[in-house]
Image (cartoon, rainbow, N blue to C red; front, side, top):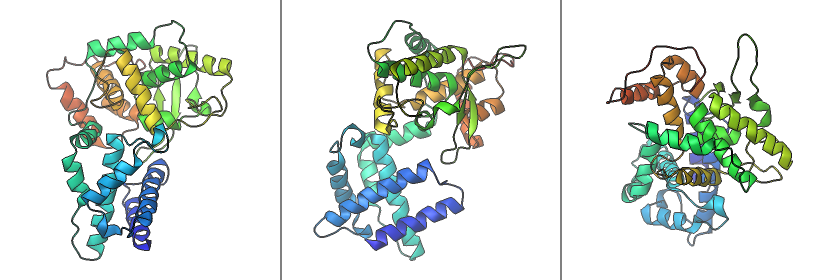
Length: 327
């Protein structure tokens, strides 16, 4: 299996060199994916090499991983797309370096699984999946409901959704936040909203995300609940009372529960639609696209262009420019 490991390391190094992959969370995710796949290949009889990763073999691997190690091991369509794309990229890169051709079983399997194809489209979002104003208002009403909740996890889930809809955070941003990343508002002649110092992730640089006032109130409520429950660790949104970090699948399912509770579609676009709704909402409110891009941590101009194109497709014209915090 040295060939598989070497091929991954070469691909990974090249991606870093061209700026498409940064050391940190994204590389760690891809490395964990590849290591799990390699371990499975070694355990097969006979062992599977890089060239042997054809569609039936990859389908068998995905089936073997479905939920066997707890809820965070259940492979979502998005996870399947990332894994299969990784196999395709590494195989293609390896073939090019050897001046050969690569028959991609991964591409074949993606094409054969509509849910996996849609997971990729939801993340690329061209146009971006988002909530209609009435749906966003319905979700916001649920999130801001002051009624006590039966479990602290329920308030955490609502706070996470509020930080996506009210601060434009992505799922990875949520899971990376620590308590020290929260900046309380300053009161005085120049009031500032709640802010979050979002760590760098993948191609997104570290940035400061201001929080809409309504979402800031929920964040404050969550911090108070977190203290009252004496939750451990320094993650802002822990998965357990002892303070363990929140897993990808667990966060994904929590967003589904919140959207379902609000009577909204929990499938198309996942929780990314909340981030996209934030962006569109700010542009419609008249905020400068450069400010919105900075709040989102977006450096690719094509991302903001898609949002602006979406606003041009029958959406109401933006309001006059304003200097207020996010809405």
